[in-house]
Length: 212
Image 1: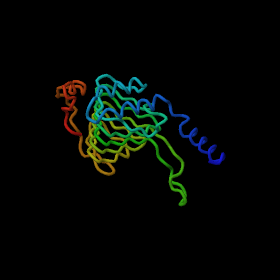
Image 2 (image 1 turned 30 degrees about the vertical axis):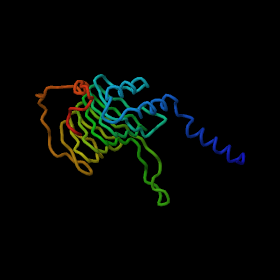
Image 3 (image 1 turned 60 degrees about the horizontal axis):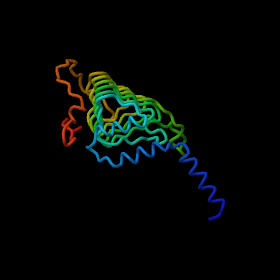
Image 4 (image 1 turned 45 degrees about the horizontal axis):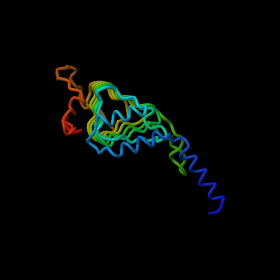
């Protein structure tokens, strides 16, 4: 192999992997051994051990895919008593904050980066980053997409398949593409609260909460 090509390969490897922390690689390796739907509490313990902020009582049915591999787990804070289903994607170019008692359905996508619209030769121009906030008690059902800069209000419910392009008011049901408020939800607190961690305390570790 010509020396110029070899030097180019070394340069590419350094630029691609230079910021990738070894603990991120180790975390990814360990999580691959945990199948979806099992070891929900163990998965949380591993994330915590590698520096991610996850509150007490939170469970995860699957491994989170991060958009910024060099930053795995950074820019994501998850509160207490949350339930994170499988195949969730978090683009953590900007901070993503998930409050307490939040439920995230399977295949939910949370995006924090966007592009300015450029010239015809290359429409995806300058990258911008805006944080996403999901407040206490909210529920994002399956395959919801949340776009940059959005705040999901406390107690809000986002219906399956919705694309959220603007803030969602607290205690509302929203859905559609783009999502719109469907109705206002009750603010009465009559339900018996069981944390996701309690729900998972069974010999099979199978979820007993409804499919999301």
